[in-house]
Length: 245
Image (cartoon, rainbow, N blue to C red; front, top):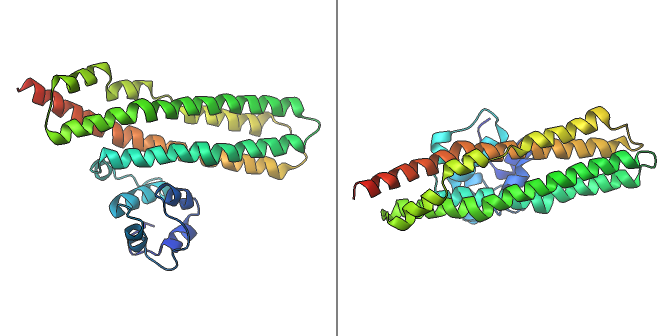
């Protein structure tokens, strides 16, 4: 099912409850009654077309209008990606840590295994933080500078030097696959962690890890297939302008 502007926002959540996390990233709060997607986006000053593409990409694995997504501004794309980073660190990671602590409190015979699991996740947490901070502090400011130079049609030596010092190709080459390491963590739990006394906690933990992994895959898809080619095309135009001066 493709979500349209005429769908009721409440029905969107009923269709796929994980869309709640996407609404949060757009600053949309619950309590919208029977308003349509279009009405709610207008109320919260959210770009309707961008919201629809993101929400459909999120709920439909086969839906990915790469060209249309590339038509949106880098400012809009970066803002969504940055809010996704905030969601990981402020919501998702603390939820996973809380479940691990609950498992440790409810298990008296597997302390060493759980401690190893917690250490593995703490290492992953730091790697995720390094990954997102690099994007927030280096990649996003760079892409915004490229967009500004592209839109103003002013290509000076300063912009050329900026692209020589850093480029979207560098980001693409350094873009580590943090989703794969999350898969390893899930495998440890599934294959090697003895069943704890409270198996429901273990299942909840796995559900959260699967959810985070899927979200990270969606996040990486937007970066790799939308942001990177869009910025690369802008870089090429900027270089061409400079050479034609």
